[in-house]
Image 1 (cartoon, rainbow over the protein chains, first blue to last red):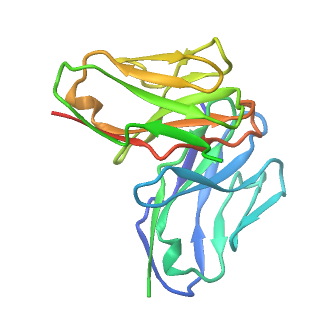
Image 2: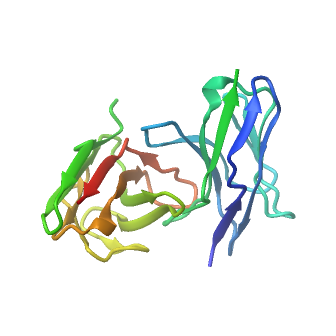
Length: 109
Length: 114
């Protein structure tokens, strides 16, 4: 069946550091791919999405490119802030979403 | 625009008690979902409703029932709560339930069963 693998962390970075969170997937067909972010005590919020190969999703300085050849959708940000501290989930879209386990990011001032 | 609203935010139950978690969305979405989130287990789908009038089991339906009351509301019922049902419960909705439709989540209900 469909599955998502992502680095579980925790990932700890200093403010202004470069961020990469790896995500790879296994799926039949051509799913849409999503990144969600969860701040403490809140629900998941859509961060960005890509619906076909080579699409780049971007939002709030975060980017991810849908790579069909490597079945990957890695999340990147050039300069993280303390306010980016959260848990990040990679997900396959469809009638029933498939979520990765989440990666906890802590950004230190 | 409230999005997806869940009530209550917190609940403590004794083993064997029953309760209903309420969820409502104001985005005119067709599909609604109930997930539970547990440490180390990620998000697991309990039940979903692809459209008004239909419901289907997800990955972990045992011990739960659902009702799609109308297009806006989707409730989750625990008939006889067990400690294993201690979790954070999230309701979500999507416009069409298809591959391109993102899920929109509520802020969760934190349930403890003692």
